[in-house]
Amino acid sequence: MTGRQTFWVIWAMAILPVAASLIMYFGGVGVPEGRTHNGDLVADGTQAGDLGLPSPDAEDPNWQVVLASTAECAPCGEFSKGLTNFHTAIGRERGRVSVAEVDAQQTVPGTPAIWVIDPLGNVVLKFDPAVNPTLILNDLKKLLRLSKVG
Image (cartoon, rainbow, N blue to C red):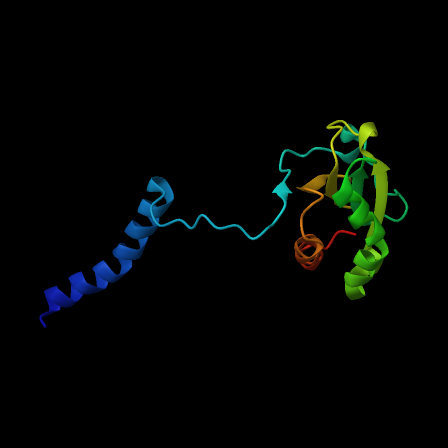
């Protein structure tokens, strides 16, 4: 290989990854569609108080899992029965999490749901009451592992 060919090979090795990343970023080609959370992400900065959900304690803020239930909601009753087991299943991080149950009629959506609230009072995730509690637990453990707050 001549010096000129070597020069162009080295330049191509540097330019091709940059060109590929620009095409992926601006063209959306090859970008994975997957997600790692199971609940519905509430990314608009909604505060718990705005939805009628309990806000974290100012003196000892914790993550909260709040079940907003109604008497007619059968999955809510099942989740409510296992609320203490759910808290125990969190494991060694359970001291950073509190669980609560409120009447769904007192919340702004007015529909049954399971909410995950961070220690700053931001609503992070919303789950359907019929969802498998293990999926909620997985999301919560991931949040606790990644968060230094609370």
